[in-house]
Image (cartoon, rainbow, N blue to C red; front, side):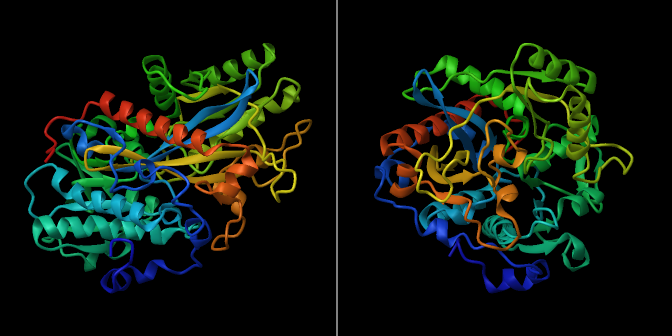
Length: 464
């Protein structure tokens, strides 16, 4: 089964499983598949947003995150980010949705550039210190390898740390932590190589963007197939917000959802000026660096906060965003963290049910989006709850962030700050109607289809 790790996969990747894994069964098993119409929840049902067949390999899966807030007396939804294949949470989803996602991922084998009979595909893992969901990365790698085997007759998983075990003349999916992969990446004649071996496909949107940032003009535009090819949008908050505002301007919608108020900064001096201008105008701001994840570098500024703390917080944000990974160009070359997005702070809603254990906590909603054949579908996967109750007089960063890894605590433990979103009890605690959730799913799917349509794939990439 696509949603199970095979014995060969376990043998080939057993060295990775050195820490406790995070079990998401409490989320997955509580998803109520009768809550919304089958056209939304069932991959086999008619529904979803159609895309052109030529765009089939542009996108595989990801998620759109929204934060509820109050606008003109009613609940509105602010789009926070579009994530790609690096998102955690495949195992939050019901097995039919998991199987649909992994099945399409296997078709990536038919999108690889060139005629090499033994292509290699990179599948980056999470950071070594965050192994709780590493089994999800291995599941994705297994799906990619199964696709390679169907197209080329054979394939296997191989660990970057044990490349000597990988047959250079056979198709393979290379699993490795981002730093160790980047340490061995280079270019030759404009093509991407790993330990001297050509690379034909790369998974994880942010990783693809980091490669482009590091290697720049040394890499041809069509050097590898990116899984997803829309990574230039999903890995950049500035690009995501530009596309979202264009989408809202072009399409009618049922939900209250206004454009994202943001500016961009391409240097530290510009970032300082933008934040100070917002403070002078009495506006709170949130700053978000380029191609960063797990809330790294995100910081909040309020007009009534201490002016002397502004520069230290800005510099700490830049340093945190830069320090996450090694550089392909060399250890002394910092990762690109600009442009920053500087967003107007939105006072997000808290859990409304006063009897709920997370009453008073801010939260955001994760809608998983995925392609099934020639349609973009969605599934309401998660409510991510902040790790601390909000005190609006003295807001703490942990109370303002709804990132699962920030709220979770110890790796490998059950994360009770993740609530099943396709669940009547969760919706009641949040004050959201099922019909509103269905509209949010439609909004996420339509926005993703808009980004796919706007994307121009690199020339020379097969679209079978």
